[in-house]
Length: 166
Image (cartoon, rainbow, N blue to C red; front, top):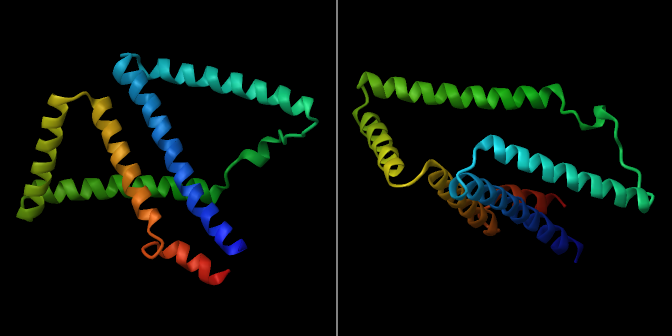
């Protein structure tokens, strides 16, 4: 019985994570797409909401006598984590640059056609809809993809490995 509840908690945690991503994407889309406000205004609004929420939580925790760690060393990420994040970004930029360089030389005709088609598709979508609309649609499609991928228990190797090892 504990294994079933642990498995459902892990699957529910993934759904909650993507739910939060959809909510955040909806906030950005509404703020920048519909209200025609700038990203600076969005960040200022989010900061105000976060500060108000934290102050209310602080008052609640103080009232309930719950101690919250405020040591900044507990909130820092390790050097290895920072290096892996930067390495991931560098690999992504390097791979993109490599693909565009090979496509620009014209040696690989299929890659050239794929890149030209994709850039033309992005250009056409940019003429039809605003950038915020396209980004929001891409975010929703990605979240749906991840939700479907994580909802299949037989397809997910990482969850199967954790269930076998428990």
